[in-house]
Length: 172
Image 1 (cartoon, rainbow, N blue to C red):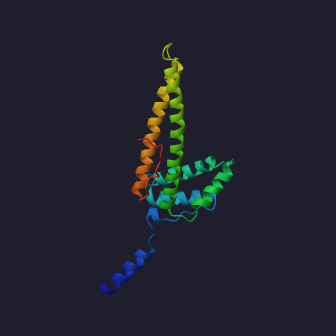
Image 2 (cartoon, rainbow, N blue to C red):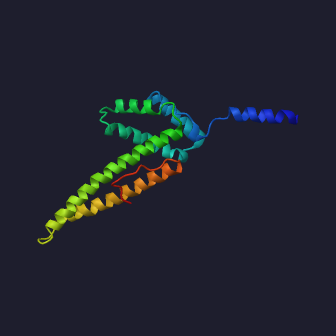
Image 3 (cartoon, one colour):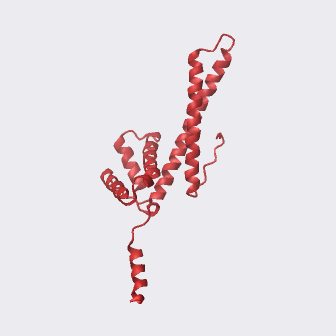
C-alpha cells in the first residue's frame, strides 16, 4: 500500500492548478478575460487579485497614453499584450505602466507648482491672489499623493524582483 502512496502524491501534485502568480492569463477577448477573472476569484478570492486588477486597469490607461482612441481598440491591444502571460508577468507590466504614468503626472504637477510658486513670488509685494495660494496648496497635496503612489509602485515591483526605473528627475 505504501509503495503506491508516493506515485499517487506525485500524480496529484502534477495535476494541481498553478498558484496565482504562475497562472496563465486567458484574454483573447473581453468575454474570455471576464470569465478568466471570475475563475481567479473562485480559486483565490478578491484580495489576492488587487495587484492584478490594478495592472489590468493601468495597461488599459497606457493605451490612452499611446493615443489609441477607441475603448475597443485599447481593450484589444491590452488583450493582445496580456493573453498567454502569467498573472505575475501581467502584474509587472501593469505596475511598470502605473509607475511610468505616475512619473509623468509628477512631472506635470511639479511644473505647475513651480509656475505658481514663481507667480506667488512675483506678486508677493502686492499680495498673492487667493486663487494662486489655493492652487499651490492643491498642487502640493496632489504631488504628495502621487509620490506616495509611486513609492507603492516601486515597493510592489521590488517585491517581485523588478528594480525601479532610474529617474533623473525623481524626488522622494
